[in-house]
Image (cartoon, rainbow over the protein chains, first blue to last red):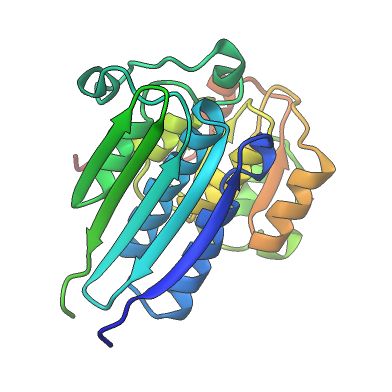
Length: 143
Length: 117
């Protein structure tokens, strides 16, 4: 298999309740494709945190997942406000989320650090006023 | 510990997943912050929380958890129960506060699963 399987999702920014639907679908697809549970969990958590971020901060966006036997790539793209200080945003506990989000159990400043923690590589491309693109990869060890 | 035993120890009501009460779970965690659950939980199959919104169910689903206990008499919405049914997660509701609920389970032998860390 040289061509990756590609899954595309639109993440609805107006609806906090539906955040996570794309991640759940990917979880199910990867399970059907026979990936190991820990790989599936890492992909699902990273993508889920990304989805939550896009809903909280950017009014939604898109998620594309490219699946190859040896690697899974997740590309999250939004047209939100961008990240002013990426280094600061990567610190655990730093958050610009409003209190309303905190009362929903998120906004603790763990989103981006979690995404980095659970993936093998994460690239953040961001421009103030334009948006943010995050590319994450999870490597699949040979069985 | 069987999920049924959790129900007994916490004098909890079963909101869905009655058919899974005899499943075994080996460790638990308690948190109202879903980001922390996503960050720190490893294989804990039970989540105790006082937070009520659909992302609680999704977070548990992401972490492959088997059972959620709502403490402090918090009640999930019908949407949340439907979501949990779909994924086969047991939902319990207890009147106990978080500290007491965690304490009872720990004393009953259900630990945090981090003893070897």
